[in-house]
Length: 351
Image (cartoon, rainbow, N blue to C red; front, side):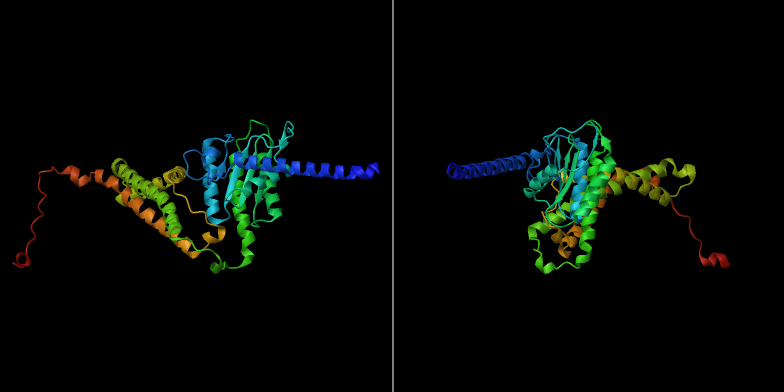
């Protein structure tokens, strides 16, 4: 009888233990989401001060600010053509301390933490990196990629990083960038057999979202137009003045050489232009993957790029106001143009 009377007490104890465990788990989850909020909504809490939106949450500064900007730029560009992606970086996430030199992998506890963080983000895919624990995990909300594709990317990243120690993580931002590009490519391959998009089932962008899409692509292309046209004129004029007569280079040849140099400069300045435009607030609306594939979304993007490059090229012609042409420098300002020799009439030849 004692065993029978003790049974309800045992059941109550087990029930209380389960309830307390669930409460602790929920508290831990809420603390995790509060410590690593969505950078698209709370960029300052994620160590991305000065930005209106971001795709990177690195409150502890695991990677440098320049590396954060590079990863952010790649995450934005890949999200424009695939699923919305985010990146979260930890110093430590596992309770057990790692061994001296191990390869990056993804333990189940780290994957669960990544899934919990993703649930509170406006993103469809997430890359979790824990520098001190050598954890590199990729999770997703939908079925953009197969589990085999995720394991393949994680394995490639592990091979790329190799057996790193706590101080040698220079390749970390490159590994994150590589994974984002691969995730975007794998998502395209996964979607290819599904056929054409049924636009009737996709929510149409509002007028405000359309203008936001136009502005998001207008601002960076204004910078591209200014750098391309402005540097071409400056380089071309300098080449024509200093090298044109020396090597017999024509005006068109000098312009072509200036265009070559401006294009090379644009390659190095492209990242800075993107960073400045994003700092100014040139960000796309929170479109889903299907909304970004709609024709109206693509038209808004192309219109913004065309408008931006037109404005930028016009502004980039400003150096022409300060260019002195050779014929203007040879003649005094108050001198009249030289008179052309008189042409004899036909009668003078016949007489």
